[in-house]
Amino acid sequence: MTGPSGTTQVAFVGLGNMGTPMAGHLIAAGFTVRGYDVSEEARGRLAEAGGTAVDSLAAAVVGADVVILMLPDSTVVEQVMGDEALLAALRDDVVVVDMSSSEPLRTRALAETLAKRSVVLVDAPVSGGVARARTGTLTIMAGGDTADVDRVAPVLAPLGEVTHVGDIGAGHALKALNNLMSATHLLSTLAAVETGARFGIDPEVMLSVVNHSSGQSASSLNKLPKFVLTETYDSGFALRLMLKDMRIAVGLAQALGCPDPLGEDAVGLWAEAAAALPQQADHTEIARWVKARNLSTIEPGAER
Ligand code: NAD
Image (tube, rainbow, N blue to C red; front, side, top):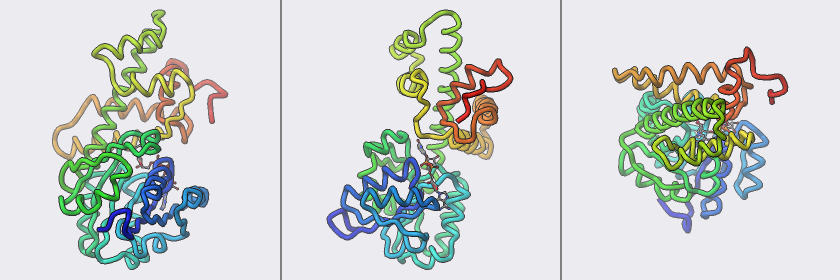
């Protein structure tokens, strides 16, 4: 596979909060990028960034060396990869890279289905959020055969640091487990800060001490100071997507015979928050639910 100075062509499907800045980095690195999203507005963003926006999946993937998917979940990934026009347009030596946070067991099954059509699948989900998608410093967890991961590594390099974590699906498993840990400590940190505040401890003082103590985490170091205490709640990662990832992780634990009761309780609490908050709520808005959970509803006027 040729590098940025050659003629490597990348198809990018899913140009949302993450996909748009990621596609922008590929364009800046010199790759030819053709992109598709069901949203016309999203396609417009790719065109503005210097890519070629097209209006069908088949038109995006025709001639592509690598197809990158950055879609909401496994259901959408399966729909896209089941599109006959797309399959017919794929080159024989193409590698499809699913960078969405998908379900590892469904990824394994999809890889088997695609192999029957001679299509190679690699999973390469990411951590770091919109902020690190913008700076091209994502943590990328790749699953698949070593030769396949090596083939796509030059295309992924402008997006962040790639670690080959195991066979197909291993990236998706690790990503879901990471987000279950992240969501659990976010909720735990918010509850602790709420208790501290009710006792009279300033949340900023509390966080500055915790961040030099053993309770620190990405939640205390990053999410509370940037998105919660500022009340901006604009991390760019939807609460419904976080809940999806948590469910994948606890489902995987159950499937593998090592159920995670703390994780299951965390899923229950996040599901309650999802039911109480607006459909499009950012995941950091769980802070509003933590504050309001003694009330019957989130306070009027807080809807967006
Ligand atoms: P998003 O909802 O902003 O973007 C998803 C895009 O996919 C949308 O633009 C949507 O129009 C498009 N889409 C949906 N169905 C489609 C289809 N059939 N064909 C083409 N396009 C379609 O989501 P996001 O925040 O960019 O997240 C994408 C993936 O990355 C998710 O799996 C998410 O869990 C994961 N992720 C997100 C973050 C984050 O901070 N936002 C961080 C790490 C991982």
